[in-house]
Amino acid sequence: MKIFQPCYDLAIRWSRHKHASRYLGGLSFAESMFFPIPPDVMLAPMSLSQPSRAWYFALLTTLASVLGGIAGYLLGFFAFDAWIEPLIISAGYGEKMAQATTWFQAYGVWVVFLAGFSPIPYKVFTISAGVMQMAMIPFIIASAIGRGARFFLVAALMRWGGAAMEARLRQSIEILGWAVVALVVIAYFLLKG
Image (cartoon, rainbow, N blue to C red; front, side):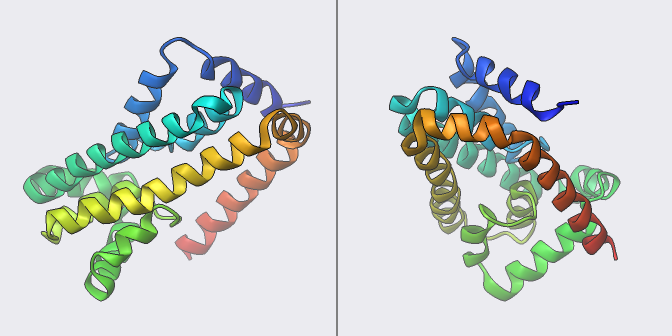
């Protein structure tokens, strides 16, 4: 029974929708504050199905993500104690928030560069930056570079891979899907223990 291939086919169909760019921007903005699904799940198939627009999609994703990061920063700055902290703890991100705070204390703005590639969700970094009252301009610059590097890398891989990449992905999507599930389960138990 195939589980991931129908999902992949659906993602490719959605990536060609006339409002897909708006959805990508909205997802990128929301993910930087609270939404659990990263924008890569839309960026990759959109860049794959429309390679000539891959750079546009990467730029849109980066800009929306940075704007969402600023909103996350403001949430952390103004509403952390009263509203955000209980939500973070109830969502199971308490330990990740503590880890991000420790990294901010040790590395400052440099940790935001790495947030784009970290297993800790970017939203934890944006809110932590606000809580720690990090300087806003360095936060924005680091977010733009870190997130941009990630999204342009995804777009480049999909653009240059083209139809051959789509065929290879479609062929191996079940193996990749189950490998990601296994990695998430392993990471969960490692972080929990």
